[in-house]
Image (cartoon, rainbow, N blue to C red; front, top):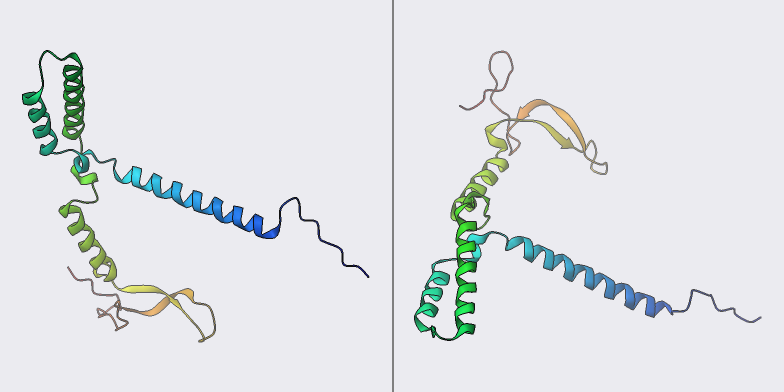
Length: 161
């Protein structure tokens, strides 16, 4: 007999794949734009002394009789004043690019890797090499490297002060 063509709608399979890939690229581009917009929200990253200096430079160069230049200068003054006000009330601890934040993040990460100086009492353990790991309470506490944690007379872990 004759082979019947499968009916998958008006578009071929390659056309559908091409359109799907195009939609995915568009979604990825939008996500990146949103991320870039969120990253630039901190005024301290975008506004500095060079902007104030540029305004002062334009104030010196402007022709006082030209209405268009004066209106542009006034608009620049308003914008710089608005940015100064925003920066004045801004908390630098909210910025993820300051050296202080990076140092605090590094310290936290180091402590996290060491379980904040506490013994590991629960762990994901595989019963057999082929089985899935399960969360179980360990018989004896260990440090992050798997070495036994020092215990007191009652068998409780000795916490470092």
